[in-house]
Image 1 (cartoon, rainbow, N blue to C red):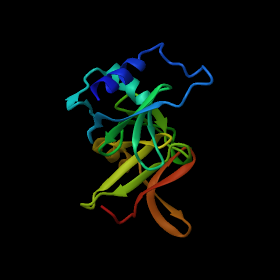
Image 2 (cartoon, rainbow, N blue to C red; image 1 turned 120 degrees about the vertical axis):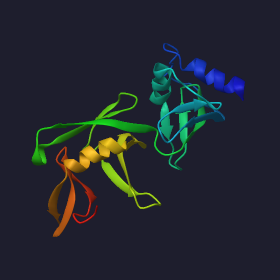
Image 3 (cartoon, rainbow, N blue to C red; image 1 turned 180 degrees about the vertical axis):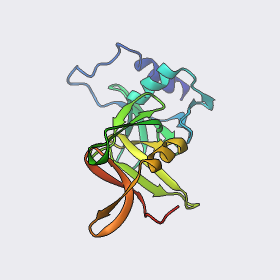
Length: 187
């Protein structure tokens, strides 16, 4: 297993991409890589944190989510499963541009990816088992960032009441889309 994970890491090095070549066989499946993304956004390999941000960003660039919900690092030559405890990214900052229905909410992740909430990058709020809100934004197809608590609090401060289909809702505008954060009476 170590040799397989090491091979995947070596194949991720810059300049080793063969995506432009045609006729390649499908990637070799390595199964579990003993790699994990913790709830706080820390990446681990074989139980040890990966402290080199450029390496984590490189891995994140080839992270994919399958239809069954599993996460994989996928290169043209190999693919290996990664365990993700919650979401692979954390939204650590939000910036507001403009106001009202023209407002744009721009999020930065812990890996410096920038996304603007809108139809292609929707915000959603789940409710955790203990009843607390669990907010997320879509970063890339199937890959979300969980909003850090301070970012969610900033979002709530920007919230407004809107009547949607005759129902008063509390949420935010971004990219011409209204995203519901909760009921106006919720705390």
